[in-house]
Length: 403
Image (cartoon, rainbow, N blue to C red; front, top):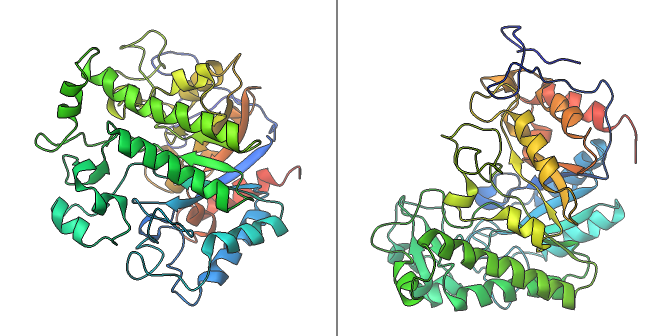
């Protein structure tokens, strides 16, 4: 079936070509059907101190079953914190009223128990570096609000600042790398039913680092044997590689994967890049995430590129990116799951079409290397506003063949 613009009726073509995008009439159901549950700033769930918290979690699982979802990426580390019992990280300020306060029960244990009843896999979604979401406080002011157990508060010398005032752990510090890896392994050690560890797209910050509080001293100390950009990529890759090795050696069968920003490089900067506009941001150069290297070297078990653009996007059309990612994982042991921006359903542009995500699913799943689909974010599944019509179509499609 050829695709046409929902509003104008004009053909939807691959980027800067006259070749029209076509999708199969039938849907190829894949093994993994998942959504992310965002706990940062309580996007998807209330704090555990809310008396309705357990009911909301049960509603989440009921929704998953109704949509034939079999995997959940549940956020357990949002800002140098924990949604689980930890000797290394304090309970999150988004879980309790004040960071470090003990919740009324073991949240992650409850989630895992309910998941097991429904044969749903839970992956521990962790943001490895982010320290703060608040941008209106100085570093010292924000760290003062943190619990004494918080690694960032204990070691302000390991915290750097982005151009918007956000705080992250300095990826160039050995102590930071060791701490992140230790924190991930603690989760797997204490929660045997966790299926694996999942990193999102926040490595070096999207905003870039500040001019005054950054990693340049670490780069100078390294001897500047490579470019600054490559130095930063090396810091991130070291954590990815080491964590993968630790998981494989200590926790057989547990999986490790990453969900990067959906564009690695554009063709304009590298012939191996995607057919996207040169103006598009690149995770390789901005977050310093060399996801293609991780795929080729076997440092990750799966990858979930965030392909949140629609088929008609003027800079980064969905089809071009889905084709690129389906090709890049060929001949590797890295499973590809497509990240869908379901939360955009109903918003201006291509996502005004209720069929946008359904069409994405049909298109992406025609490729053998695509092993699953992941939706951002859970609250979209229960939204009664703009995304409702589109999500009802998604629900119908995912339930065509149970399995």
